[in-house]
Amino acid sequence: MFDIFGIPIEQCLFYSLIGTTITSTVVIIGWIVNNSHANARQVRTEQLAKKEEINSCLGELENAVRDYYAGPENKRNLAKFEILGKLDRLSQIIDHLIKHHSNEENLYKKFTSMYEAITDGSFGSDTINNEASEEKYKRILLAKNQLCSEIETTFCNILSNNSKSHK
Amino acid sequence: MSKKLISISKDFTETPGGRYKSDGPYTGEVFRENLLYPALQEFDLVEVDLDGTLGYGSSFLEEAFGGLIRVKGMTLEELNNKLIIKSSRQLYSERVKRYLDDAQKMRFKSK
Image 1 (cartoon, helix red, strand yellow):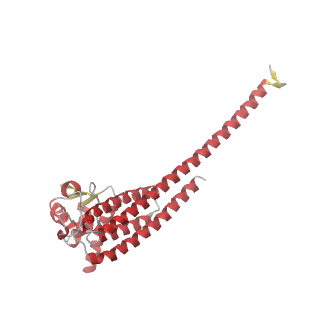
Image 2 (tube, rainbow over the protein chains, first blue to last red):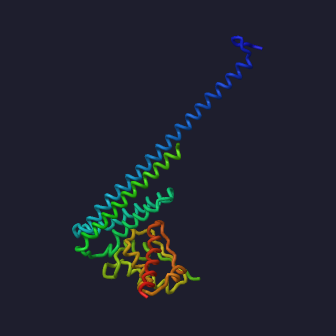
């Protein structure tokens, strides 16, 4: 049998196999850890983008509500459609959040409160009671602010749950 | 068993809004009086598809559906057996159920 520096070839092969196994294991573990962190970062980026989208949607909704309840007559019809469009988009995002993060009942409640505040009474009517508009607008803003703070809480929970699950 | 499908966007309008007849041409009351209530009288089962419109205000939904109990005198039990609400948005289908429940509660209170 051959010897390498006085060590029998079988022993050399055995040590080399152990070395290769250890190196491969370290590489695989490193890849898994790195991949899991990359996934966590990806999820975090997506969630933050979703939160940004909700907040921007709420900002645009607030402008449309102002135009509808307190703006000039010629802007009302377009504002009405914009409000319905934004509410529909928010509803879609919130449905998705609730489906995938099941403990967000408060978020849904706050959203429906805002929806009711904006569209109750005679929303979409050809005429509007201007005297009631200021009071109504205040009520809508209050509901919107409550929804915003619930959104903060929801996303804090989602992000903290994600980071826990990746630890 | 006879069944009727009403698609609000196809059979009524893509832009529903307002509560009473006096609010405009495509209000909750107009929908209830011209389409929904007659269909409930005529068919055993009525399915209302809410998709395809620009969206709904609560005023429209409350008047169209809650009004079936408040104004037309139907009962919640009757509507649970006859009326199916189809919507891709949880918001609208849940609101309709809520308005029906509220209208039923109001009816008991007023008795």
